[in-house]
Length: 465
Ligand code: FAD
Ligand code: NAI
Figure 1 (spheres, protein in one colour):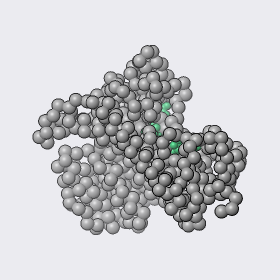
Figure 2 (cartoon, helix red, strand yellow):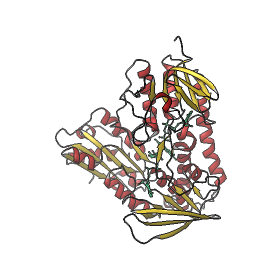
Figure 3 (cartoon, rainbow, N blue to C red):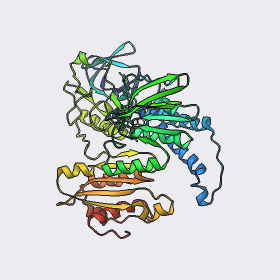
Figure 4 (cartoon, protein in one colour):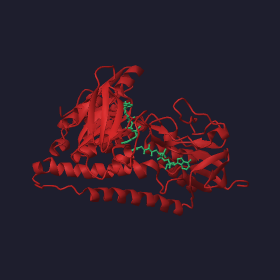
């Protein structure tokens, strides 16, 4: 390398960026990664996947103890919530994992450029007042919360908060209103409901969890309602006012109608996320955004500007950590002259509530639009392990092409659906038919047997129903 400081400079150290940097270094490329946050790991490790799962896991134990699920198995306890300790273990999880990335950077001799990077031209950026050049620059700047017009988020105030504020509440709200019945709203709404809050979810659409299979979405509505959440579907928020420590949320039917005011001591705004492209100086390299303010790339993650690549939440596709990670590996391999590919048709998605909601591939609705299909379903109630564990909710659904039997999509609602969906993704990646899954020996007794039985149902012959 003659003229550049680095072969590869990655902007952003989230799951996309830090993985790209590590793979590039592993492939022998001189690599740097610019990150403005005080710790590495991006949204996911600092304020996203990891801290939310730390609270979901702990609050699940609390509810199992308080709600009688443990007593039903002969374990009688009267739990007392120690929120500072629960929050402490969340912080420890984040500290351990973000520190782990710092260790991996050192191990792989990746230079962490501390600060926010801005393009000067296609091969140079300014970070903390210093100009750094690279033959290849990977934009992995991630995403931030989409604001709701007219609603001011104030995480420090603790009344109207986004996901970051909702992770850090110092006390359990009595009443919480969640604006947006998507993944964040249901995960973090579940945390605080389990710990004692009365939670109302206001969702603009007629069902929760847009993007998931229609039957899964309808079932999600029933399950969260049964768990005690108040769901206001087909409802829009027209304003939020804060007086002292109380918020007044004005809502009305999305199709028009009478307004209603809901009082809450915490309002969580979770109506989606948008790509981080502002302040990057993209105008200086002539890189334009699409209508959704995302950076478009080709199949190799190259942008229209030579030497500039992009991955993760900042490009189109689901905003998921594992998608960003896989793109990080692929982009580094492409830069190194290898063939890095991500199959965007097989990206699993999981909502880590209890039960978990997971899916991969096409929804039944999308598969029907594509052509003739066969569908097999199996209820978790008929799965021996789920039944024994007192986990009756949910089902597995396998969708296959009517002619070729190739699996097009798998949807699971189960206590461990997030783990189960991995085998479905692998089967689809290998081009499996439902018959392939049905005739694969699954360990007994496991929740995964429900996937086998749903595949058998596609063929018309499940055993246990
Ligand atoms: P990010 O993780 O957003 O990282 C981008 C990084 O770039 C940031 O650290 C930012 O500081 C830095 N940056 C931005 N601009 C610059 C600049 N100019 N210079 C230097 N650095 C810059 N996904 C899942 O798959 N599973 C989950 O369970 C899950 N849970 C989530 C829970 C919550 C509450 C949230 C908010 C998100 C969750 N996600 C989850 C989504 C996941 O966090 C994102 O999809 C993932 O982090 C995207 O990775 P990324 O590398 O593209 O960007
Ligand atoms: P989301 O897109 O999942 O859900 C937002 C919801 O808000 C939608 O249901 C939408 O219809 C609704 N909405 C939009 N505007 C509204 C309004 N004005 N009033 C009422 N409802 C409104 O977005 P969310 O939950 O904010 O999450 C952002 C991203 O983070 C997601 O794309 C997801 O991929 C990622 N994430 C992933 C997790 C996981 O994988 N387990 C966990 C948390 C976040």
